[in-house]
Image 1 (cartoon, rainbow, N blue to C red):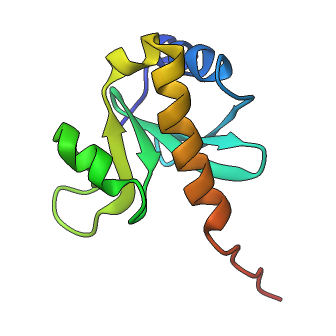
Image 2 (image 1 turned 90 degrees about the vertical axis):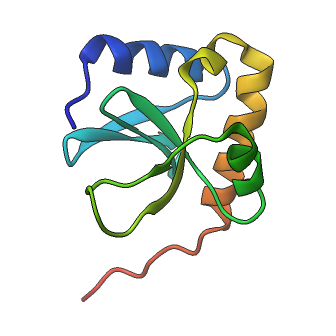
Image 3 (image 1 turned 180 degrees about the vertical axis):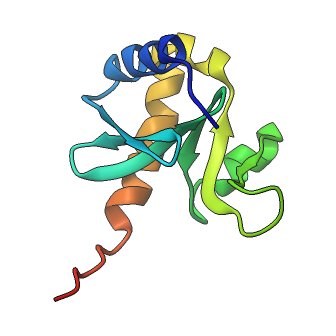
Length: 113
């Protein structure tokens, strides 16, 4: 799922209004970090934010899609955020802060030897 540079730049610009972020290329898309916390990803034409039981119902109420990188198979704990929500800084802040909190609570994996 290639990401258009213009779309990535736009998403990063909007997210920067809420919190400092950086993007890292991965698997044809981009992982989005706030500090060391991987809280979002951009794939294709969509922005997905990290979820757990605390914020998943918010996305389910919106009826947005869970991130499934393959046509069939497991889904990852990221839900699509409608791109029009990027225009409202305060609303975006709420969604982003919840996802960053989810990423903070996730235990870090120990590196192998």
